[in-house]
Image (tube, rainbow, N blue to C red; front, side, top):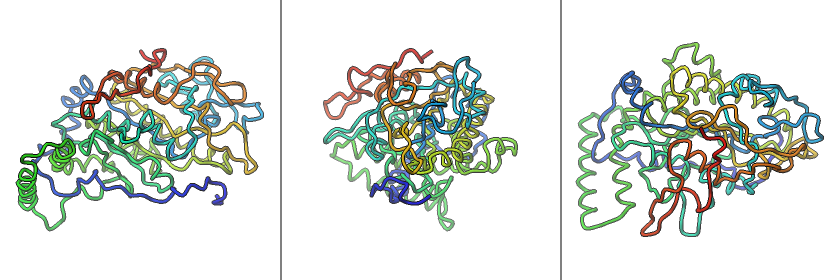
Length: 434
């Protein structure tokens, strides 16, 4: 697609973050080792996870997928485009014909059609939709993954708390994972070059004894440095280093080559499909939050060709993920979210594209405490504005937290200042909660 069809933000360049939030250095106090994937997948472990821990997989549709070609079609309207709508397994609910597999599974899924988030900029819009609110001067809020890592991670866990796959370059710098004031302990493991971590294994010529000796040395030096000092940042870094050995042992989770051929075929041959399969392996092993980014939906030109290519892939992969989780007894404990920084304009520009639009767009929530088959929010006949049940970013986040059993009014503290999970006065959308 010609470059002129894209918005010309200077921030489209690659911006690699430090892997493991700085955990590439050797660990200090060693976490309990995890050497076998089978141990994580054992019935006893999985049964315990199902009873005690909720998890989230976020499908991040980077650049802004069109609601009109997915969840809120307007066939026949001047803004509607060339695609039809089709009936789903929920009476009266129609979605784009590009999503025939999800049309059979909408009883599992809630559609939020009334998103009005008011920010049509890639960078700041992505931050809002990853945090649920804007940062303040001097205060950087943690994103959804970091909050869920804090709330749903376990101190003794040997798997990562927060993993993000973003292996395509487009838009990566707009939405990096960010633990904000929660600190390095809850920073994401960011995969930007492939589906497996690059730096999670020991060097070939390093023995276990070498690794332990280096960890012991760092522990000794670190304790000497920390003596007489009190710092949340220092404490967070020490906790993060302390989990390195366990994280290193989780490398097998990222290798889906041993999955049955039928399972791999269901997800399809694309990288997005493979990463969603790995995401299922991760949450099954107890990882609280996994984001899988799929770029690039920023269709300022050739919108319909772009979506004709990308929406069927989303349809296949999302339906496979929902089925897979259901067959493994995880659908009530793993939430699947589709979200982006914004949607696309109802108006069609001279390049047959749709531009940035944050006034009336859609997302979906599947699983956990959300009512499947529900629809919240209504847009007008052309999709230009929300005419009923408006939802902003804060309310969406409050809804997600509530569905996961987390009180949105819970406070963290930065110094002596209480910081609630969502801004004061923001409420969850109770109509979509079970």
